[in-house]
Image 1 (cartoon, rainbow, N blue to C red):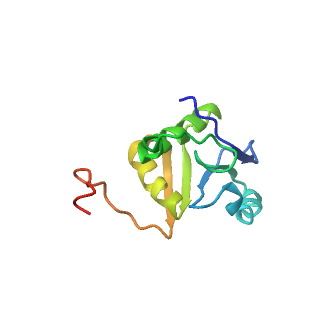
Image 2 (cartoon, helix red, strand yellow):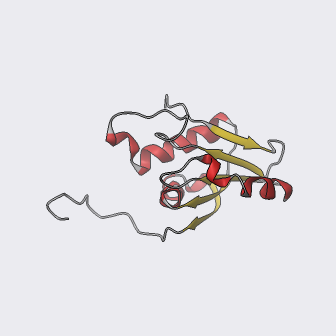
Length: 132
């Protein structure tokens, strides 16, 4: 989709793939202590910095940061790396992204987990400022 994402890819020969999604305000490096442990367990570990964070592109339009758009970024990254399915793990804001990625791309998800972010179903209609 034209966005440039910074990412770390460790143990690229493994077919057991984890996609780790950072929280806010954070970067891929939040997972730095977990990456070696997971690699030692035999996983390929992909850790992007989401759009707007770190060395990834940061569009100016706030509409470019919705769950659907960010999920499309992640699907595009998996396409680029030729990875059909992953286990997705998210923390904080990344946990919310993880839940929505699983809804938008269920065929890409073997399993998912979210830390510090409970599942909240999508709203039936957008909430306006007046309703808040």
